[in-house]
Image (cartoon, rainbow, N blue to C red; front, top):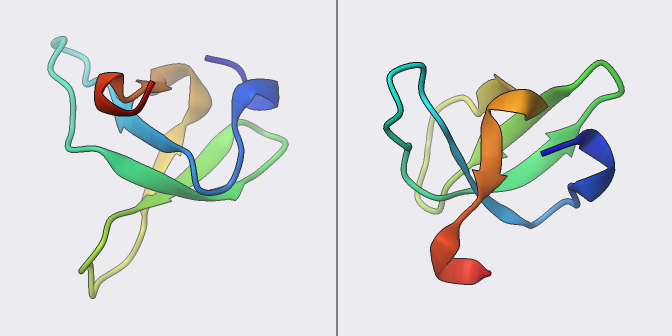
Length: 62
């Protein structure tokens, strides 16, 4: 996935180094350097900070 494909509010998953995917999360921040902030409903802590190259669209919301 590249940065131009992302929009605030999109639901994505992070693909971990060993191939597993995280829970679906919403994009809440996008930065030019490829950093993306993710969050999920009910989260009371910090947002996840990931690189756009590690993301893909959630297959449930395609």
